[in-house]
Amino acid sequence: MKKPREEGGINMTPMIDVVFQLIIFFVCTAALEQQAIDESIRLAMSPHGPAVEQKDPREVTVEVDAQGRISINRSYMNEVFLRNLLRNVVISHGQTTPVIIRAAGGAKHEDIRRVMDACAYAGLWKVSFAATKDKAK
Amino acid sequence: MATKRKRKRATVDAGELQMTAMIDVVFQLLIYFIVTIKPVDVVAHLDVFRPSPEKKQEQLQTPPKMIRIQIYPDGFTINDRAVGLKEMEVLLARLAGIDTKQTIMIMATALSRHEDLIRVLDLCAKSGLQNLSVVSTN
Image 1 (tube, each protein chain N blue to C red):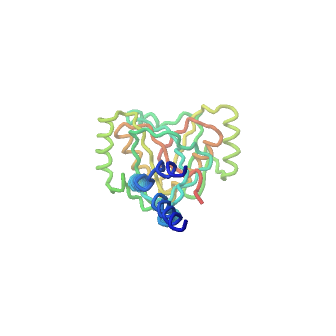
Image 2 (tube, one colour; image 1 turned 135 degrees about the vertical axis):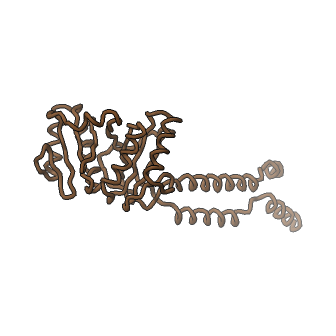
Image 3 (cartoon, chains in turn cyan, purple; image 1 turned 30 degrees about the vertical axis):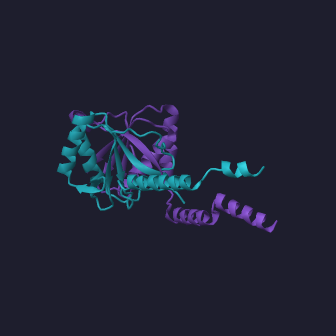
């Protein structure tokens, strides 16, 4: 009576192995995605701002740190390079490409201005500023 | 009887999963994730209007109807009147009560902090004002 039930059981070990492999794969790839932004930038607080709901895949995030250095994807660049880069963005994706300025709260406005001027020069007009809506505890 | 019991025990052991090792590994993973996880801040994007380069010249002469907010390194003004943050919040809420579509021109001086610009944009977002344009001044 008991014998057929024992033989019908599935061997779980290979399945668990595969599941762990999948978990590790996803954790590694998720961590890689986050490396693109500079974690050291402390954004200003904006508790009433609209939360980010959907992302445009074309969007360009320009970062400005408290010392006024401009970077995209953690590579620092000067103003001339930024202008040329944004021009190329316009050529490949059009003028409606959103630009997000992710600037440190302590940055001076003149450094933000350099980024905004580069956007105006390239013809990009969808500019928005990133701020922290809710701080994670 | 004794030999029969022994044989049965042996087959059960072979067919059952060894849970101890798996639980060890699962706990290791759990501890790893608890230690490494970092909560992510919720990010807001404050949209502003920027003039395109051709319109830059005509933007300089501001129409008198527009509401001008100026941001200095040490404070704010609305239409050339110095105000505090609280007062500005009240004024913007009142303006938004009349019309949320009117244009607010935010002029930030070069040495003002970006934080203050975000603060003003945040107050505008709170009141529901939508037409915000940011201009840099010296």
